[in-house]
Length: 249
Image: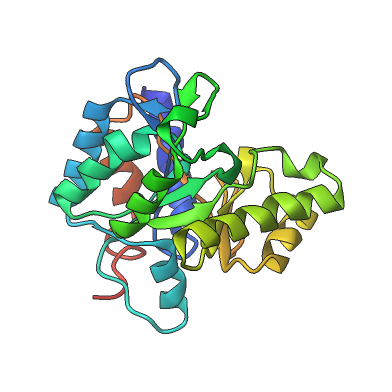
């Protein structure tokens, strides 16, 4: 893992050059062999490290509010979980609540069924149903949009692109009864016209992967893969501990 760890440190430093708050990008939590599926014990160790090291989890809304004069706690960090897999409810939420932490969950609205009997399974994974999405929001988690059906947006016609971006937000807001202000680009596909569509749809900001920057609609994230230890995470986050990550209080 040495060479990969070095790459992660470089990526973290790039992220620190932006708004000063690291954003971690998770996908699934479970026991399968997908590299983007973090083992439950790995997530436990990572969350315990963040807690013991003095990091405070915040939402993307808090990060952008801070740019307008709001306050962030010291050592702020954002946890994000993409796609809306059922393990967000069964594995992630209990661990966050146990530690008093919070996260942002990006939901593919078209993959959310009404009940367990009609639960959607794709890519050999099960997705959340609407009552579970509401439970995340009711528990204090931030909900964002990941489009209607997780397509590569730059390949779509203008009308289809706008529908994927706009309709997902409208559906989520209808079910949750609260604003949905943040967007995650499927496959990190964020060409200029895609970003424009996201802005036009009324979002406050959007996140990408390691190729992002400090712009509100291309916020950079650090990808959390299977195999990242607390020591790796410490290396990813420690370089600018006393500078970029200490605003607020």
